[in-house]
Image (cartoon, rainbow, N blue to C red; front, top):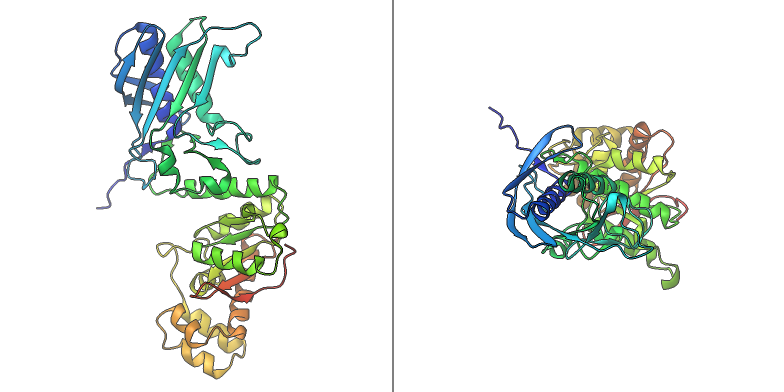
Length: 371
């Protein structure tokens, strides 16, 4: 029997719960063991609180993020909230309903345009911010005294090193994210959200085109290839390069929605072949490499017998391309099928492929896409 995977909660939900707990302790001047909050998904969730502390003007606690069965880099992170009564100086702004929300240690700040928050703002996205405001408002009831809510993640900067935050322009820590409050196990949403954010940043930074990569090795090869003859002052900015992982169809569709109609796609031969076979996702669990299709294409395309002879007995795509010594006719053939498959996903798109070898170089470069 297939195991039912356990869902978890977003950083936004955990931050809102911690903020509500701290606000309740501040108002009651008593320890609170757990809190329940309403999630945007339309359900209520209860969170245990830890390290509860309070005084007559400030209270703090934290919630440990439980990502369920999702392999999330933030699983086990402590989402701390401190709620403080603040005086209201003349001409000051305290935010909606007297609630100011800011980040602390381990919460990043945006440094590039195109994100859900503007440059210089704390990386607390709009939905989590509204969740925090509502949770604190519920706890404060009708109190007229303004408060400051500070969200922090003690090891957030360290955890952020395992994410693409720095690439996106979120520096100094993690983002407070989540649109439903719930993390669905093994969903692709974290990846696809990151692809969208990276493309938004590229557009906001004025990049005329983007380079989608299936992995870091392919991306590094593409960066070296495209920038090798460029003056340092005219080298492609880092925002041009977008890590799409296995989410090929989604990334291409996301490009089209943002007007990037001739993106480069950097990948190694096995991923290229999967794209050419029409797979929307090139992960091993979602796609099976079909070498028989390649053999048929090679014969129909009139490739030299020396190449077709390497395909029939082969077990892997890597074996084939190495035996063929990255023959341009083979790469051109598979790229043409990959381009056709991409247009089936997005008819208006004209991608160009950069095929990386296994030594860190680009073995095949499609026609210029106007970078």
